[in-house]
Length: 400
Image (cartoon, rainbow, N blue to C red):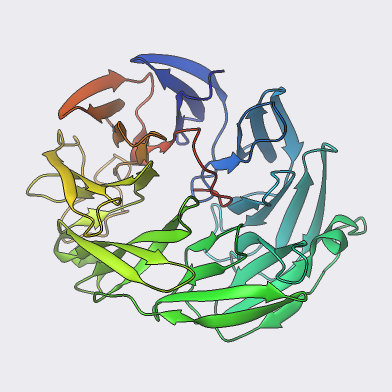
């Protein structure tokens, strides 16, 4: 496939597509692990870019690239996935799936050069996954971010690769100086600085001599917290949407939102106010960020120019309403009648000139460029908003 095409996953329907020039091309049948998302794999040699995701039905890491599609066995349900700076190693952690409580402690490490995977046990609780270069020599370490109690656990990559059969338990070097409610991680592969989002702020750390070492917390510049982060690898900045307002999720129409941009090395912070309502995962591409906000008074797409020191709003446009949006006074992820909870997925092309946003449940994809909206219909509903990714550009080594 052409890796400048937009990738679309309708994980509820178990189908994936590529979109280019208004044409939709089916790619295959797979249930993308929605929480883990798509993972961009760094270029290896002259072969071009590749992408990966976890198929939550078959239990496979699906890798698409110059060698075609490969499927390598992995434990499911997939919760987080991440790769190292070279793109050779991919780590996958497991989550709840269809269960009410966390139950699996299995971690999978895949070696894409050898087409091999190994599994070991860590700790139940949907751990975050990162591969972080050690400050002492740059050797990659697998880092698992645990919750309740909060901890960062570093495991030497060779030790994980040498895991014995029958899924043995492996423990690493652990620090507990992180909040219990971590959710959202970033790694700057150039500096080795990593961070996770908690209620305290952006908690930064490095791995030094195989041991995690905390660097201090950058407080959120506005009330609330971020739950989801993206990395701009070109600048070493973490970007997230800080949600504030009423703590009750049934009051989601009153939630406040701010796009926050933080330099991982210096801790310098910028922010831009967004409309109220439900802001789910956002897009990042080129020098721009794009956020879709859902609200009974009308959904909006906000495009922010991050090259502007003040992060000014480049565009703000209304979006065609979803047929079955979340209901005010109810949890925004609860179904409405017989319809699944609907929301929107957003992606920005690598140049920052085109923004894609889905119309969950209506099987439509809107493309925003040059001040206008074009609409593309896909063959399935895109329930829950589906998932988008736009290959190309600098590589973020954590799945989104």
